[in-house]
Amino acid sequence: MLATLRNNARLLKGRKTLNDRKSGKGATYSHFEDHKKMKSHEFAEFQKKIFAENARSRKKFRLVFWSSMIVFTIILIYFLFFYEMEPIQPLKWPE
Image (cartoon, rainbow, N blue to C red; front, side, top):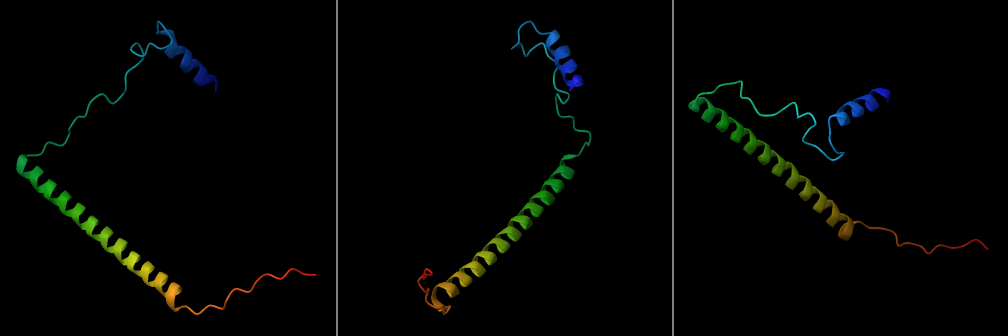
């Protein structure tokens, strides 16, 4: 708690007003630096690989989603139309 108060006081010290955001410290990540240099054909192969992986994952998601929806619908239809239930008896209060 004490360290937080000291840090806040240190950051507020350089400001002219309380809402002066420009005089504060900037973000540590100012811009994106690409450290891996790829040639254009390597990048095209990389993009094809990523697109193929995305298409495969979408296909898998659709398969799982629709198969679970079909199973759910079959179970729902079974319970609505084919499951033989005893009629609900009215509640009898003890006398």
